[in-house]
Figure 1 (cartoon, rainbow, N blue to C red):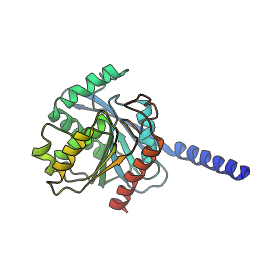
Figure 2: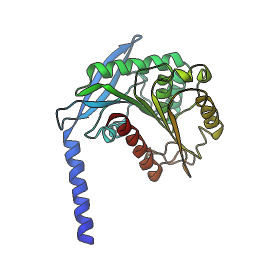
Figure 3: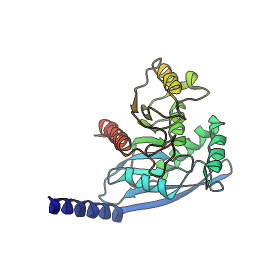
Figure 4: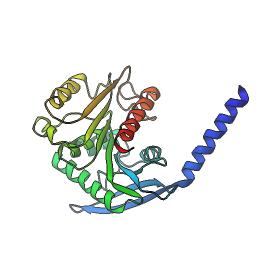
Length: 259
């Protein structure tokens, strides 16, 4: 049994090394409303076929090494992923206070949030290597989860939206929730103190009044930021079981759509 376990570990490490060897990054710079942005596209050069694309909006810290690693994990050999810069190159938070201010400025201007997400989607389609433009989804984490749901409410032409522990409400939720063309998957911690059950109930009741194809999954004993290994506070904490289940739910939706 010990030998078998050692071999399995060796195989897993070899597979990870192989995947990382084939993973490519492409930094794309673009302008929007006189602000310069730098987003990063990640993809595997294993194989020469076009792949579905995933626009990924990080949490309130913006583009970080941790978010880049998450983008690589999501991409694997199956998808092309762009880690989106929502703030512009002049804003790179270094702590929670700075991140809260940066994210709050975007949340406070939903037109700006939608416009920046839409521009990122446009750039992604134009500049991503090996991308199948007929198969696009958007995913986001915390602040990013709210951003991709807001992109959907603008009527964006994407197949799916996946929110991991993201904001669920919007000042115009009731007015434009029905404008969403994509399938929605919300992955939520049932004990999240920052997106409480009152927000969940409002989201559900609103979505029930639409024809949108949506799902909401809640994970027990799980708070905010449950996919972030660096999260370690009472209200925002990594939960490996819930994280694994959430990513599996995301992959199941994509398999349903694209296979």
